[in-house]
Length: 371
Ligand SMILES: CC(=O)N[C@@H](CCC[C@H](N)C(=O)O)C(=O)O
Image (tube, rainbow, N blue to C red; front, side, top):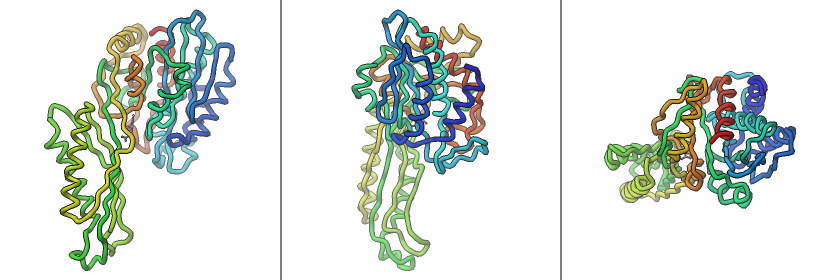
């Protein structure tokens, strides 16, 4: 398939970003495309808003899987693209439009010329949250199509087009969402001593959270606590009776995740006493770390080095990916695909270079045929 066809698909998908488990138009778009491919070797099934496509091999034997995530983010796009999101406040700001297009490109090639072994394409919902990989793994449809090896890619804005990058072992962090609700006595702005101000409680709690990373986590280990959203108050002259912090925790090991959570809970107990308030903590969804199989990465590196594309050793990143749940059960790996964008992931101005689409299709096809 020519890059211009891939660009057309990417732009059409870019217009219709949808949040986790609401990817109805996206699923329809993907199914419409898949239905137009040669069907002789294909089996297509849906799971929730996701899709699984099996391409029967000409000989049989092992099954290799490729996973593409399909959801968008709650972010207002500011790219200035002519094909900007039709869905106000939602955007493909993490490259899932690329991931899906590349999967369709590779699927097209495989449907036309199947590999000797079987291949499975997983179009997975809800990577950004609440997480589609874990329930998809446990589904009956996955039991039927379960691959023996699996891989996936993620766009990398900081890498040039033509470069792919990964590493054996730990690639991405353990994650846990973090929702903290504060509730206390509000009142008149002029009489603070008669209230317990939840704006003050939540904002100092927020700063205190950073002390966990600075003083409770071994400096040779690593953790991130990010609060991405604060909500509190109704008007400038009422002391707020409630506040909410929304964020995420990232650690390099599941054990550090447990200790960070214990520290957060300890601080919360202290704040409840000091601010005469109630604090409730909800950890939302958690993702298992992305741990790449060393032998699979080694084989991938050899394959890529045999092409005109560049293989680069990656560093660990504090990104999360629910693909980690698939890798927990099936050997495989995730890799970065260079897309050279000045703006990074989760930014409203993310503009990955579309020349990277063909690179992605070439590499995914290679992996599916040769791994
Ligand atoms: C690749 C990527 O950006 N993934 C997301 C995964 C988010 C998981 C969850 N909603 C959380 O925020 O903890 C990321 O933010 O790393």
